[in-house]
Amino acid sequence: MSTPQNFYAEVGGAPVFRKIVSRFYEQVAEDEVLRPLYPEEDLGPAEDRLRMFLEQYWGGPRTYSDQRGHPRLRMRHAPFKVGPIERDAWLRCMRIAVDEAGLDAEHRDQLWHYLTYAAASMVNSEF
Ligand code: HEM
Image (cartoon, rainbow, N blue to C red; front, side, top):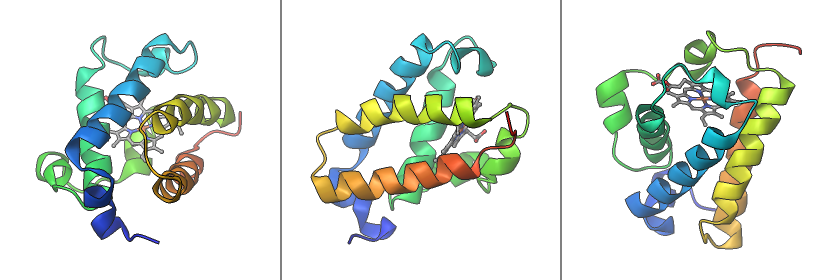
């Protein structure tokens, strides 16, 4: 299995991450659970942050930390209610984006495993 250090290059680098995250936010824009959570009308900056974070996590450029500092993702999600419904909505949008990205099965499964785990760890509400 790839390590996060070489995954970024193996799947095709920046264009692939751009494709996944932009497709994800197209889904968020239409999602009645998720859209109200996002404080800004323009989802573009949120899209940039998620893309930079994922690129960094998977071995790409470290622009996220240069601009945002330590990720501390649970803390950054604390202002938003993330319960099981929000988690499932997030994963539903992400599933579409990942499935359409054209990754081979091994990389797709590795990415998906990480995302489901990360989404579960972001839950901060029982309901
Ligand atoms: C930010 C929702 C899971 C990564 C945000 C924001 C919201 C949100 C509302 C603020 C938008 C903004 O950046 O202005 C959710 C919900 C989740 C979830 C409902 C469901 C479980 C995740 C996961 C990851 C992630 C699993 C990583 C794999 C990020 C990042 C930011 C962010 C990197 C920007 C943090 C910053 O630098 O300020 N999220 N998120 N989120 N989220 Fe999530």
